[in-house]
Length: 196
Image (cartoon, rainbow, N blue to C red; front, side, top):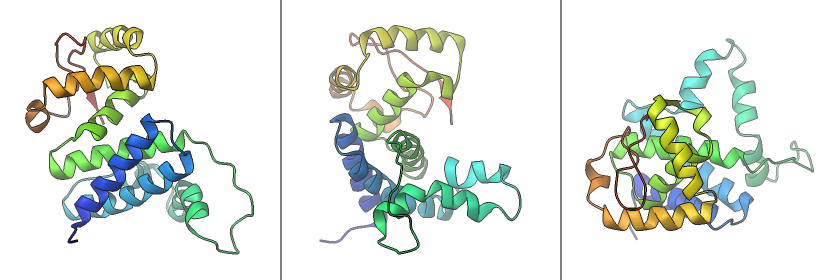
């Protein structure tokens, strides 16, 4: 089996997103999404793209404190990945860490490939819907999100509605831009503009 780094990153990321929507094991999700994120961050750097977590946030870190920031960012990943005796025996893990890492990995995948396969698009859509305050949105987009929240209040209802939308609109995933996440159709999705 011959694989490229981008194919491996996509496989890991799509599996993590799928598990996330199935309310799968958060430790497994974290391990997969961190592995994908690490590959994508390197590929992004090689392709002139950036990672929100690894590149953009670091700009605000004091000189000499970069290692402290990366250690905090990788704390759960390292605990799950290594049996190192220097690590504590118990780790407090917040599964919501997965969402921000998935969001960054999904954005990097899109920046590198220009593609947004089903699970990656769904993940970004759900997190935008769940946490609209995290994004710079136009006022009309905020109202659309409020409307969508009444239709899709859970991951399960969102993925069902989104799956129907995606099946009807497969061709747009190749041509859509980062700012047109939902298109008007009978599923209730409309354009939502945000920047990352």
